[in-house]
Length: 370
Ligand SMILES: [Zn+2]
Image (cartoon, rainbow, N blue to C red; front, side, top):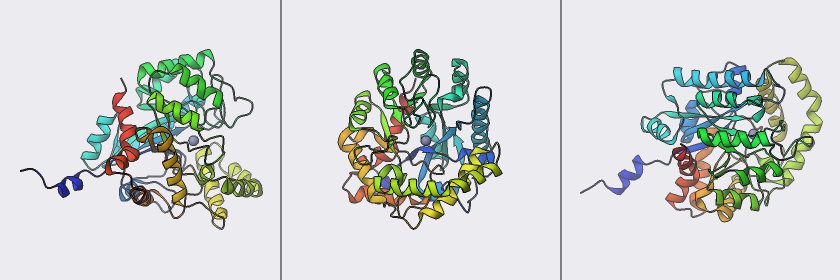
């Protein structure tokens, strides 16, 4: 009796849930339709399907140039762009919890989730935070590279402090709503304030390991252990600058050299930071190709390290696709996920461990939200 084991395997392809992709800016500012295959960038629906990516958090990234009076509107416009995709593409469904992700996947569709990146999007208003939740946002990265009035950023020397009293109100409200608190990008002081305040699991949607690459965007072993104790999940970032210090130094040099050209691109796209950044990433990517780009084994080293420090139940993926100018060799876009899956299997992770890393760990948190 029963179904042959081989058949069960066939019907139980692992759910790959990417914790962070930066494709929404492109959809809004460039009016790009990702339901068809595109000649550039990392993500569109056909390439997600080809790579086996069944679900992704579309980052609702609010650039630091959007101040009070504009930041929240920018977030709403990006949310509308993702909702429009789900409403018009036959094979994309908006999802706000684990059950909706599994239902979409069972129909052969891609599940689109949303996370806001940059707490300045709420313009210091809990009502606006509620508004984001009501529109389907299920995590918020407390800061981007800019700190804000209530949380410090790892990349903002002027705003690198901890959570203010209002910041604690924000994360308590997120907890009540069932919106995950995302500590990617935050300062170390804010990180520890969040972990001291939160009883529900937190995530780092797209961060790698500082023990292997010293970039301040990465998490220390103490921080990884604290997230594991809290029951949370870290989505390991694919960006080679966060994977390898030697490459990071070369990248910084290329940026210095190209700065005048970046400024010219920004001047050509006033009011369209998403489009300008996409063009900048393309130009930068072309100049990086001659360098020593780390390969996918370096990404696997970060995953291994996170698993060793945190345990298998706390590690996921957060590619940063379409927000970064280069990927570990020989990955080129969303179709390259099978390289990563094969790499995990080659490192002797069991089927169940592979599933945990690819998506089940993030799904557990989405199912547990109130
Ligand atoms: Zn980011």
